[in-house]
Image (cartoon, rainbow, N blue to C red; front, side, top):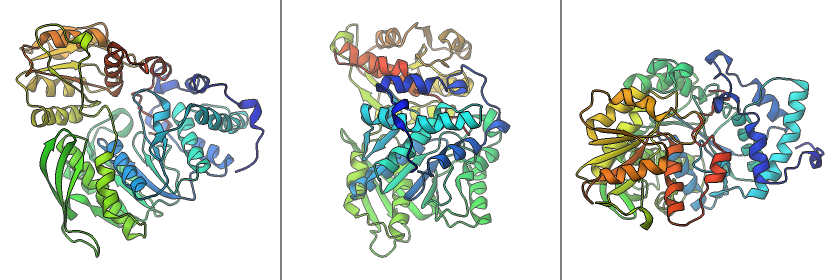
Length: 492
C-alpha cells in the first residue's frame, strides 16, 4: 500500500471516528433522500480502493448475500475457519451496539485504538478521493473500505464478507475472484431498490457471482422462482453451483440450554467426509439449522479447494459461534421482576414479514408458552402489514414502541396495522416502558415476551436490561452509532 502522511488525519478516539463516519451517513440515517435504484454504482468504492492498492484482494474470500440468514451463516463460516487455525476477518452489518462489531479479526471486534488508527489512514485516501472527484461517499462505503484495510493490515488468511444490500451493486462486490459466493434464503425486501418481484430480488443477489467465482452455494429456498434465477445466473457464467437442499439432509435432534442439536447427512460425501454428523449450535430456530447446513456446505467446498478444515473445527466452530440478538433469551433483572408474573423474555432482530413469521414459528417450538406478548418497533421503510399480519396470528397482546434509530417509525403510526385485531394493543413511549408494560400484561410465568421488529430495538432492549441490572451499557456508543439497524445502501 502506498505511503501516505497519516499524521494530519489521525483520530483522537473511537468516538471521533464515529462522528466523522456519521458526517457521511446521508440516506443511511435518513438525513438525506434515499438513493434511487439507478443511482447505485460501484465506481466510487472501486476508485477509493484503487487509491489504497486494492486491499480487498490477495486472500481467500467468502462472499455472502441473501435476504435472511446471511449474517448468521457468515458468522458460522468464520467461527469454523478460525477453529481450523486460520486467521480470519469478518465484515457484517448492521451492528447491535458498536461499529467495531462489524469488523472482526479472529472473532474479536477491532479495539478502539486500532479502529481509530486504521480509520485515520483511510481518511487520507477518502479526502484525496473527494478532492479529485467531489460528491458523496457514504458511511457504508467508508466502513467497507476500513474493513478491507483492517484485514490487509492484520494479514488475515481468509475474509468472510456479508453483503450490505442486494449484491450486484453492493459496495462489497469488488472482488475479481472469490473462493465461494454464498446466497442464503431469499424473500421480499427493499423492493424500492431491488425490485418488487422475487425474480428481480434474486437477480440482484445473484449479482455477486462472476466469472472469477470458484464455486457458488445456494442455501435452502422457499421460492422456487428465486432459486431458478440463481441457478440460471451460475449456468450462464458458468460457475459451479452447489444446491444445499439437494446435496444435504438435516433434522433437529434435541434442544438443551447450550443450544440445539441437529443431524446433517451428505447425500454424496467426498473422500474423507462423514456421511452423517451430529452437530450443535447455540443459535435457535430451524432456519438456523438451514444456515448451519449452508455453512457446512461452504466449508466442504473450501476443503475440496485445499483448505485444511478438520471435522473437529466444524463441530467446535458451530458450537461456539456468537451471534447475539437472534432468538436470544434474556433474564429480567431484579429491578424489573415486580408485578404478577415473570415471563420468559426473548429478543430477535427479525425485521421483515418473512423473518418475523419464522421467528414466531421458532418461538412456538423452542420457547413453549401460554400467551405471547410482542414488543414491536420497526423502521420507516419496512412492510408493516406483513409484519403485523404474522404477529396477529400468534400473539395475545402487542406493545408498540420505537427504538432510538433515526429511521424508527413512531409507535403511534403502528396502531393502524392492529385496528381490527382482537388482541390487546398499547403504545409505550420508550423501550424501557414497553418492556415494563409487556411484563405487566403477562398472566403468569408461562407467558412469553418477544421483542421483534428491528435489530436496533433488540439492542435497546439489551441495554435497558443491562442498565437495570447495574451493568455498564453500550447506550452512549449506540446513540453515537445510531445506524445499528441501518440498511447499508452505498451500492444496494
